[in-house]
Image (cartoon, rainbow, N blue to C red):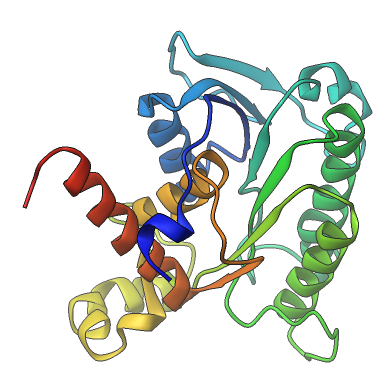
Length: 243
C-alpha cells in the first residue's frame, strides 16, 4: 500500500485533547495548534496550561469519573486525542484502573453522545492485553479500555501502543527504569529501533491520524507508529519540494 493509499486529505478539524499537561499530550497540543488542517483545539484537563493561542479553548474539568458537564463542550467536535494516564507504580492498582479504564470509558460515552461522528485517538501502551489474561495491571487495564472504545460505536478508533517513549526534552523521570532507559537511549534505539518512539513523533501520529485519516488500524503497534511517522515525513517533504 502506498502513502497515497494510506493517507487521505480531509477538511479542517475541530479537535479535543485530553491530558495536554502531560508529555505526549503537550506535544500533541503544540502540533495541533501549528497544524493548518486543524480549525480549533479544545484542551480538557485538571491543570491550567499557561498558554494562549487563537485556536485554543481551555476547559478545566477535575472529576473525570463524571464527564456529563462536558456535553456542551464536546458537541460538534470531529475527534478526540486522549492522552490521560498514569505511570505504573506511581498510583495504586485501583487508581490505575480508575484512571486508565473508568475515566476513558466515561469520557468516550459523553463524547459519543455529544458528537456521534467523532473519531477517537487513544494512547494505550505496548503489551496491552484485550483478553484480560495478563497478570500485569497496566496490560489488563489498557486492554479493557481498548475493548470499551472499540465497542462504543465511534466512526473510527485509533489505538496507539508505544513501547518506550523517549521524552526528547529533559524532565524529571518518574522512576529508575525511565532514568535508565533515557541514559542508554542512544544505544537502545540502534539495537532495538522498534522498541522506542520519540514523544513528539508519537504525538504527531496521534494528531495526523484523525486529521488526515488512515486506512491502517485500529491498532498501531510501536513499529506501525514509526512507519507512519516516516510516511508522513516523506509526504510532507514531497509537498514542500524537499528532497
